[in-house]
Image 1: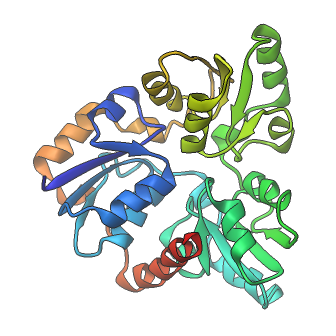
Image 2 (image 1 turned 120 degrees about the vertical axis):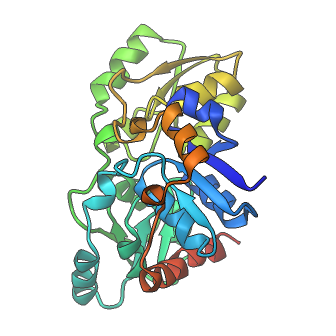
Length: 291
């Protein structure tokens, strides 16, 4: 197989079904790092395809929709991080994978929602500059005995941040037997009401292994397709019908087929070589900390 199609768990159901492999940011990073295919078609937002390109400088990475961008990834710049490092010169920078290559290039390591607590815990420092998601950063603070400074103060995922405690209480009232699993990009008050908190692969495993037959899912609604496919005996509900990332949903089955057939140069992901070299150090640091 010369081309591999990777799709994030938030993609449209028919895009997930067309992909060779689906997963969360961490799983897709690992697949992109290990694949022997010459061409990668990445069905996800921009930072994900950038990461695949950084890990595979000798391969071609294509995005079916180049305008599919992560709003949170563009809420912080490399200049923001460099300025924060001047204020806290002894701190180490942990960039959430949901950042641009330029931000990763000035960071010490990256993390995903699945391993953020572990990565921060393992770093040999008492002060962390965490960017950009304040909700994930606040979640990390619960588990580490370190000073975690979030840069910028107001960064968040618009899709997850719109979920409210009232949404959880209403769904629990309507489904009293259900447990609640939410993403750590949610507000702290939503996390406080959840039975499980984790990235999308963690949520999937929770649904698979819990004794509860009914689960309320607090993350982007594309995740429900994968859960229903892999957990046919469970009843799953979206915490909110409005938890949809419009940027993820830009990619269609037709755009995937077009890129697979044509491999157009305008859909290729290009990262400045020097930026990519520095960003790869931060990405490799994450994998080393996971060992």
